[in-house]
Amino acid sequence: MAELKENSMSLPFGTDLTGKVAVVTGAGGVLCGMFAATLAEAGAKVAVLDLNEEAAKKVADGITAAGHTARAYKTNVLEKASLEETHERVLSELGPCDILVNGAGGNNPRAQTQKEYFEIGDIEADTVSFFDLDQSGVQFVFNLNFIGTLLPTQVFAKDMIGREGCNILNVSSMNAFTPLTKIPAYSGAKAAVSNFTQWLAVHFSRVGIRVNAIAPGFFVTNQNRALLFNEDGTPTARTQKILAATPMGRFGEASELNGTLLYLLNNEASGFVNGVVIPVDGGFSAYSGV
Image (cartoon, rainbow, N blue to C red; front, side, top):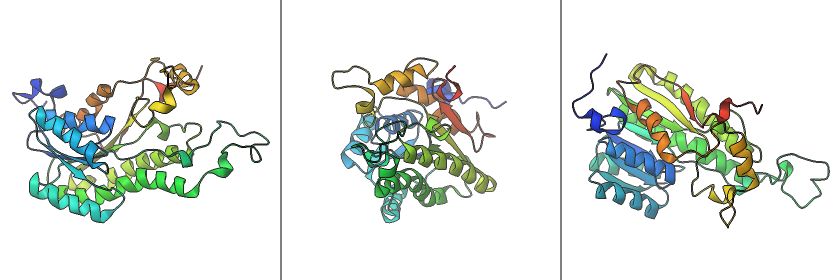
């Protein structure tokens, strides 16, 4: 069994990423911003990518203030030219990419229904039913989640070819296992990300690149806060249903994703793990409801 490095016990979950360059997309958000900080704490030099330059800079500044290395890059994961420009800057300022975390993603109100179940009369009613879903909204959600994973991989995985110990980690969702009501596009897009993770794992398996995914359950983020809590801070009806269907009876804490994140990127701990999608959801995906 491989021995831990001398300083690894002081690092998060014993994972030493010293000398590695990690690129994290969507890193201006709550979860991926935490991923960036965690990778930096483990020793990696982190490229913080986000379309929101101010959010990316805030995350990078927090990392550098803690004594670690990070740089912010305004990047559109849906534009290859933007990604290639960022890639050149990362190469020059940090070095070739060893770890790519594809975290950019999200939903859009134009791609969701207002009701969980379709009922007779909904077509004529003043409600957004399945038949009213906006095509451009659905396309945006699919592009953001799937194309926003494919394009960064095309650009940054080239750095990994022929170099040992490189990893790609995609961010899927428990929606990929069982679709949630109201959000067909997001659920379908995350299912595509999970499938793509398996495809990439096979495709790159003979050049030494491991590809896995983490599938978060319900965590409170800036993006979903309004769906989960009313303005007065009380839980919405949807929150009550979520918690009733989560055996652990609570939302996850962002830090509870770190163990899985670092395990999958630790080549000593998970060197033979390839093509898996690990749910971190408090048992949501395992619960039948009875």
